[in-house]
Amino acid sequence: GEDVEQSLFLSVREGDSSVINCTYTDSSSTYLYWYKQEPGAGLQLLTYIFSNMDMKQDQRLTVLLNKKDKHLSLRIADTQTGDSAIYFCPKGGSQGNLIFGKGTKLSVKP
Amino acid sequence: ETGVTQSPTHLIKTRGQQVTLRCSSQSGHNTVSWYQQALGQGPQFIFQYYREEENGRGNFPPRFSGLQFPNYSSELNVNALELDDSALYLCASSFRDREETQYFGPGTRLLVL
Image (tube, rainbow over all chains, first blue to last red):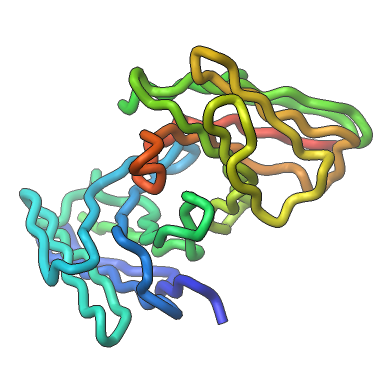
């Protein structure tokens, strides 16, 4: 299977919370990351979590890591139309690289 | 914005041609990684450069090659272009001891006809 699995689509209403989930085949990466990609653009590093942490909060963003289940989630509070984008949760590879899944496309409806 | 710049922003080539893409790292970063992102897919690792040498490579053929310069900027060269090389090419820079924490440029969109 894929190293990183994500749901392909998520649709929410403006003002609601969004939760984007990732599952890994293994969670040996020291850090796990969340990137945002707007249409036609590069990737923006949103936040990251050290693998021995369970949770990290950064303004509207909350990252939860369940290492036992190899599951990572990103919660966006008070989702805005500007949050519409594709979100990636890569893990670290053995060559100092990042291994990406296909991404989750978040659509925010007014 | 990250401070990582790439040029050109868009490029159209024909099959069999060669292309060179350029990347300038964020200030202070000494490691550069290149990724290929096909439409609807996540980025795929091509290779990484540190101290002007290739430091790691993904599953890409030898016609994908690179360079890193003393100022840490980098080039990606692709020879004998194929239609499937059409993609967004992303450059990312990082510190050597935290090479996984990468900051991406805006990308170069390559179309091969």
